[in-house]
Each structure stands twice: as structure tokens, then as C-alpha cells.
Length: 162
Image (cartoon, rainbow, N blue to C red; front, side):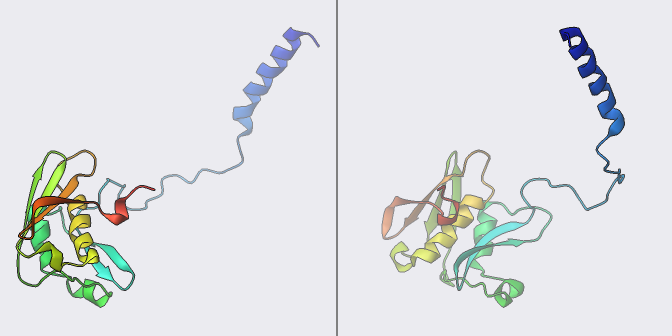
């Protein structure tokens, strides 16, 4: 068989492929809800359960801003979250003042940072990393308190790569 015959045979084969199909019948349009749009709306909060830290997304038409997110976190889990085993170890009284600058979120605590357990600090840090504070890579989290006047840099254990 010459090269011309091979090319002709190959071209004929290519012409036949679309006609043969793959024997999967078409289904038409299938309705399955709204398309994915990125970050789920609602407020993203981190609480604790018997296994450690866990994300809870409070449904809503939008995400709360940075300070509102921390005010909501300090209020603790709602009924549904508490009934699913979530709890908070953040102090019942006090405040977190959250501010964002490019690449950093600073959390100013009204109580001493040394009084908080590592999981409690993770509640703050993970919530800060997921809070709406701009675009770009996850921000660095700096914690400032009366016993730590120079910022302590933290990272959410759940978001660490590797």
C-alpha cells in the first residue's frame, strides 16, 4: 500500500467516525439547581466540636463584613449549630476589633491572649482568614492584646498547605 492509499484510507476512516458516534444517546437539558458561583453566601464562622475546629456557614443573602463577622462569632453558636455539637470557648464578655490592611487582618482583643487556649485562638484566626477583607491570597493574621502589645502572627491550622 502506497502512502497515497494510506492517506486516503485514513481520511475515509475519519469521515466515518462522526457517523458512527459513541452509542450514548442524548438526554437533553437536565435541570439540577443553580450553577456554582464561588464562595457560598452567608457568614463563615469557626466553632469547636469534640473533634476540634469546624466551619459553620450561616445562611444569608450575603457575607457579613469583617467586624460584623467577629461580632457574630463572639455571640456564639446559634441553636442549630449548638444542637449539632458546636460550641465556642471565646470569653462571653469582651470584644474583638477587626481591621484589615492589604495582606493583613489585625485582631485587637479586649482580654489577654494568654487566657485563650490554642483551639480558641484558632477560632479567631480561621474566622479571620475566611472573612471578607479584600481579594487576593489569604491574609496574615495579627493578634494584639493587653498582654501581647506587639502583634502575634498566626495562621489557621485548617488552611495550612501540606
